[in-house]
Image 1 (cartoon, one colour):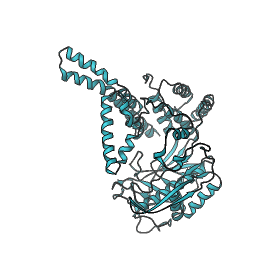
Image 2 (cartoon, rainbow, N blue to C red):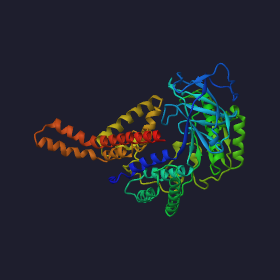
Image 3 (cartoon, rainbow, N blue to C red):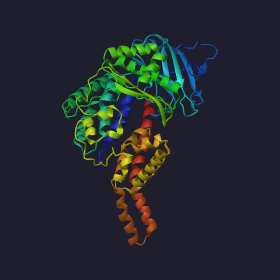
Image 4 (cartoon, rainbow, N blue to C red):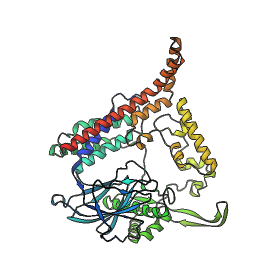
Length: 512
């Protein structure tokens, strides 16, 4: 990998943090919520506000038991100056980062179930805000930990043009993190973004000059990227959520996850007319119909409009006394919504029948739509843990061997370790995504250098130590330092930058 010499990624990361903060026109921390612990709700009838509800201040905590629930209630009054504007109400606990068992919520506005909240969807949309709302929030602690949780709610008004600019910069910036610095696409995107930054005036966020500069930068970015639009690759994407019917939570919680996920999708569809969505699990539609006939009717309407795709497929039903004693079988075919089949004319029969053992190279090539790649694993940010044995590092070969041994042992036991399987198939770049900012791409690049065999340069240090009579112990120490120093340096630099950025944000917040 070519060395990164101008800290482009670090500079863009810091600038985007600053721009994200500048996009906030006004924030109001909300209090005055009422709180009532509860079990699983029954239907969507909202509880009466009575003596069971107690005030919940900012120092209070809720939860304390696994799989616990609670209601929060507030008569939300919107300040006169903000009425008629598009606002967002953000709800957070102290738990951050992606986790399938983190706290989650279901939101009711004026008696209507409107959306879910989770670590990826934290904002309640109050478009064209009216004077008053009756707000109920149904909270779920999580399935694995008995945590005592905060409940923080903040009302935001944003500068729309600055927010738009943020995404115009953030999306191409994040794409470059999946590329090598010496690739042409990386260089092209980097050049465009670096030329856009001087156009942006953030000295007085929200001022006329600031907003005008944002409009100018957006116009430049749209024109510059339109010239780069023809890459010879067409990507077709559609919204989707996968919900494990049985995994780390109860079946009753799966029903609630369906309500959260599908209500959020419908809210996004109302906000973004071009947004389309696909769901493939027939059981989830059954849960939705039983739990919320109103949401089910909305989904049916979106299907009718061609915006919600019901994926077709054949399901095999099995009735058994045990896994090895199947008594009855039957098949059910779901037709789907009749969307064009992208594999029309291609022989992908094993995929359509879920017959994994019958997949050969010809079927795989038909699925890809082109010849199978030569199979050579590229040692870069995208290399997965399962392929670390293809590198030149003894350390990462040991990591690979340990993971493989744990995975194989779990597979032989008949109880696969899902956490190990997740890591086994995870690319190195994902470390930067899964550590909440503690690790950045510079650290990942240092790890990639080691996988490529950077550490073997330590042999020279070992030989030099022996030649000078310093001894094998000193030589091995120099070897370890040779390997560890770039990784530790990148990690420390990232921590320093995070701390510096946090101080800047805190100082900016105090000034505002």
